[in-house]
Every structure is written in C-alpha cells, then in structure tokens.
Image (cartoon, rainbow, N blue to C red; front, side):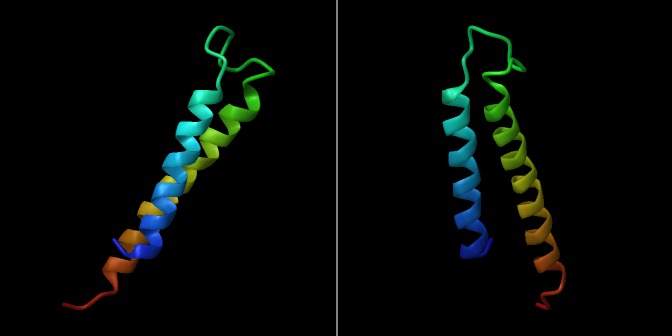
Length: 64
C-alpha cells in the first residue's frame, strides 16, 4: 500500500473511532442526537471501501 493510501487509512480509522466514542450508547443508535455521528461513521466506512478499491486498481496496472 502506498504512503498516500496509508495516510487516508489512518484518517478514516481515526474518524470512525472518534465518532464511536462520541455516540450516546444509552439512547437509540438512530436517535436525533446520534444521527450526525452515525452518518459520519457511514461516510468513513464508505471512504475505507473506496480506499481499498483504489488501491486494488492501482496494483492492477503495475507490471512486475
């Protein structure tokens, strides 16, 4: 994995961890107070998926 992808991997994992910490676990996950954190976690997960797809695509074009 290139350094560029590693930086974003760490950023997405940090975003997910911060938002999991900020969730109010006493109320429902999809309550109005937690909804902004849930959307942020979902976008970070989508970013992780796209990161691995782009990394895979970059490996396909490399000749060994």
